[in-house]
Length: 442
Image (cartoon, rainbow, N blue to C red; front, side, top):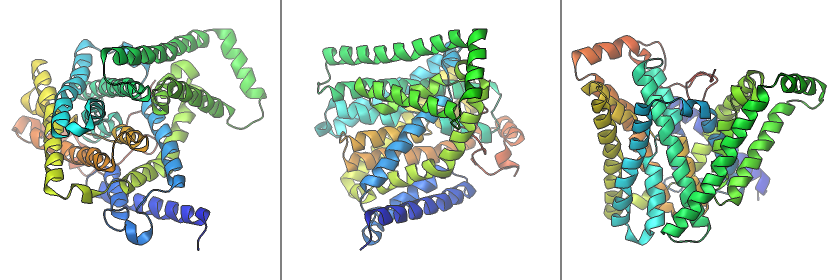
C-alpha cells in the first residue's frame, strides 16, 4: 500500500503533467490554457475517470496546494492594478465598469433565488457575484491578442474590467463578512459588514499613502539601499513583502473577509510607487514564472477535480445551467453594448465589447473555491458556477470576432490589427513573463 506522501506526489505528477499538455493543446485550438487545464481536471475527477485512478475526491494535501495557489492567484490579480490607476480613471470608464458588474448582479440575484429558493438569499447573492464578474487577466490577454493594446477601445476594456473586478471582490468581501458573523441578510448585517470592509480598505489605502510618502523621502531611500546591501539572507525583500501580504491576509481573515481579500489588496499595494522599480520588476517576473509554471495549472486542474458534470446531466439541473448561461451572458452583453453605444462607439465595437466582458477566469473560480471549501455552496452549485464561467469564456472571443466581421470596415480593422488572423502569434498564448498580457506598471 502506498504512503500518503507517495500518493500526493503521484497526484501532483499526474495533474501537473496532464494540465500542461491540455493547456498547450487548448492554446493551439485558439482557446485559453485554463480551458484545457479545467477540462483535464474534470476528466480525471468524478465526472469520468476519478473512480478508476483514485482522484474522485480531493485529498487534504491537494486542498492545501489549492489554498496556497488561491492566495498567490489573488495576489497576482491585485498586482496588475494599483490605487493610482483607479484614482486617475475617467468617469466614462468608471461608469461602464460599475454597470457591467452591478447590473448583471442585480439581474442574476433574483433569477438564482427564483430557480433555487432553497439556497437562501445570501447564498444566491454569492452565486450571483461569481457569475457577474469579468476576469481582468483574461481580458488583458484578449486585448493583447486582438490587437487592442494602446487603442482607446483596449484602454476602455481594461479600465472597466479593473473596476468590475474591484467591485466584485469588495461585494464578495461584504457578503463573506455577513456569512462569517452568522447573520442573515438584513440592514444591520449589511451595515456591520460594510463597516468591517471600510475598516479594512482604510488600512489598505492608508498604508498605500504612507508608503508613497516614505518613498518620497531621500534619506529613507538611502537608508533602505544600505539595509539591502548589508543583509545576508537571499531575496530578503521578496520574503519581507510576502510576510506583509500574509499579514494583510490574516487581517482580512480576522475581520471575516477571508484571506483571499487580503491577498488581492496586498497585491494592489505592491507597485513601483510603493516598493520601487528595483524590487517590483523582479518580484513580478518571479511570481509570473512561478505561477504559470506550477500553481496556475495545478489550481485549475484541482478545481476541475471538484467539478462533477454528472450532477447537471439530468433535465432539471441542465435547465438551471442553460438559464444561468443565458442570463449571465446576455446581461453583460446588453449592459456593455448599450453603454458603449451611448458613449458613441460603433455597433460592431459595442457588441464586441459586450461579449468580451463575458470572459471569466481565475478570480471567479477562486471565489467559487472559497465558497465550496467553506461549505457555503454544494458540489452541484460549484459545478454550475465553474461550468457557466467556462462556457462564457469560450464564447466571448468567438462572438466578439463575429461582431467585428459583420461590417466591411470593422472586418478590415480587425484583420489589420490582430496578430491572430495574420499568423504572427498563437491565439491567446500568454506572454513569457506576464499573467495578464500587459506590461508592468510604469
